[in-house]
Amino acid sequence: MIVRELTNSDILKQTRTKSVALIPVGSIEQHGPHLPVSTDSEIVSYIARKVSDKAGFLLLPTIEYGVSFEHQPFFNLSLASSTLQKMLVDLCVSLYKNRITTIIILNGHHGNHSAIKQIPERVTKIRGINSRILVCSYWHFMKRRFDHAGFVETSIMLAISKRVQMSKARKGLVPDGLSAKELTRLNRLANKSFLSVTKNGVWGDPRNATVKDGKAILDEIITAIVKESQTWLTGKTRKLHQ
Ligand SMILES: [Zn+2]
Image (tube, rainbow, N blue to C red):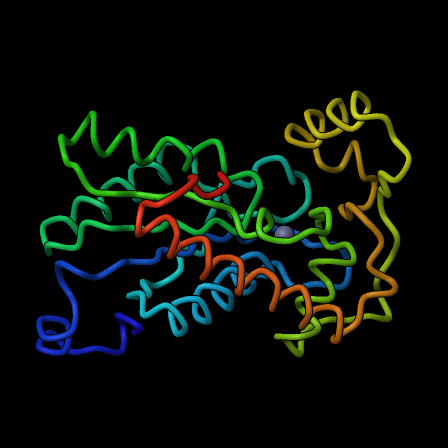
């Protein structure tokens, strides 16, 4: 159920106390020379749409802006962490006032994570509301290593968008063979300046990306999120990845 397509009475009939709201959060930031700046928002919106179709969740509009300051001087439209947090806390409170108290926040951009992981605690402690809120990032539901405009994101975009310019795709930083320590160091540096680590804004190598791989990766992610969210909702076993 897509909330923006429903009427007030549809929502009153179909939703409320048993509803699970799904909030996708993306970004607008450079994704190399070959992918649109909306890549994270498009990917997380697509996954959230499929998950909500399969699981019967109430899909909220994607928050398309995220925390992307690390991409300066490349193009990025960024919110302060505190702004994104406040927006999400307000949304959770608003959902609560509409008697929707189970919420999944699905993240599509690495730089948003530290801001949004605090949402459940903030909603409870600051606003005194006992909603059940889960925060997760989609790439924790795939076996492949996450990248930025590399093989994974480019394959997914080939599968869902017509705006990939493969002739412009260039190899970026490929972290294969690096020690865990070196990888941690580079990740930390990339969180401050993506340019200084990758040189061209690409983490990974997009040149062999295919539609087929994109579809397979999406299937894996969507199936895993549906399965694990049911487990989380029934409260039987472990928490979802964060
Ligand atoms: Zn991305």
